[in-house]
Amino acid sequence: MAAVERIEVTRPFPATPADVFAVLRDPQGHVAIDASGMLQDAEGAPVSAVGDTFVVHMDRESLGDLDMGKYDVTVTICTFEADREIAWKILGRVRPQIGHVYGYRIEPTDEGSLVTSYYDWSDIAPEWRDSGIFPVISEANLKATLGILERTVRRGYPLAAAR
Image (cartoon, rainbow, N blue to C red; front, top):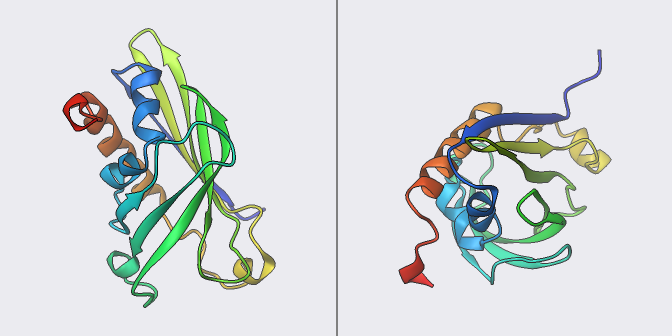
């Protein structure tokens, strides 16, 4: 049996795909919904295409697995289909780059949206595959982030007054 190299979790949302996508394309939206506790802040404009980037200020202390202190990563969008799917890779300080992908698919439903969060490490560098640290983020963490995303969208983020 092959090892699992991808986690997907799905949750229905009482919100339009456009409202969900608005949070996911905004760097501050990523910070707002993160259940891992690693994302501390972000810099950059909302993304609108493959190749767009933004910086996230990280702190891995919440995972308690590696002593990395505070550090920055660059998020690079690798899939962008407005109101349907967004995915990204992380460019960090480690070499070789890891190559894992995080993303969301959004499907319209009669009640709003069906949102799938995924984390894929099937194409990571061999050095990282051999390290035994994957998955870094658990299925429970993806489920919790979806719950926070649903609550965040329902409460009206991003707030018009903040724009």
